[in-house]
Length: 332
Image (cartoon, rainbow, N blue to C red; front, side, top):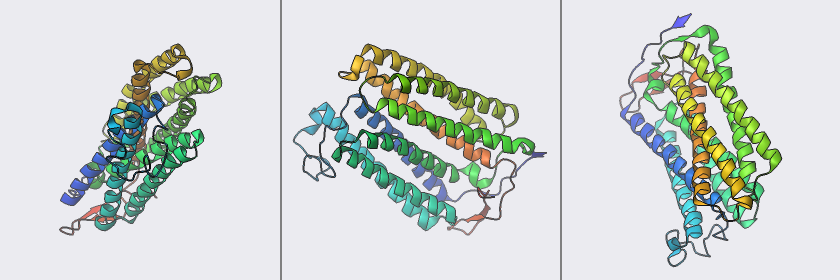
């Protein structure tokens, strides 16, 4: 059965601006990922030895005279500043959503994002205080969960989601499409965990972890191509599922090349005690591309969740003019 959902209305001006703000938060989070990857790549995670202060100072902009002239300190303290910016943006987003959005589950998701970013900041600080590489790995893994949630919040405030204009789809294979999409998210997340375990100790390449990561890359690539094949065969009319799957194919090709380059360069720079500029650039790009893959995978999976399901009786009420827009439910 082919369903042709009709648009149910236009999103409010407030929602449009909140969507833009959420996209800004997501973009700033990607910047934070890049900065954090740079910190790890140059082994600068302990360049600032204390937390929550920096060099026993609570001045965020000048904790040490001309601190920006020392690259490790610039990297680590700059990472803290960008992290604080993401935290502030998330706080604003949570308060804004709680006040303006009539959807109760959106309020809870926004608060969840705030709790996650707070946990992230705490883990990052404890990693310094406790000198814990294990916390560095957990810090990296939870960051991807936070980013996925921000991507989902951006989707939930977008025009295609609010209006219900999802294009055409085959309801008969909706369940299989949903399973494929969420399986891709799960496989990709396991691969990110393996990458964090391989990368954060900073003592070279562990043969067992490297082998698992390479095997994971093959499985992840296969899952992405399966998702793309199914989406391109029957779901080209979707606003996010097919475009997200298409971008994932492009990104996984880039990621595969970056990963292979990183492997070769790291073998050349034995021990990673003095990483070359090429190694820093490749490793940072590899991490950022992985985050972008996760964002696309979450967008595809959330959009796939709507396939084969009629708009629910849950509604979003425009606070400006009381226009009611029907909402597709994730819980049905």
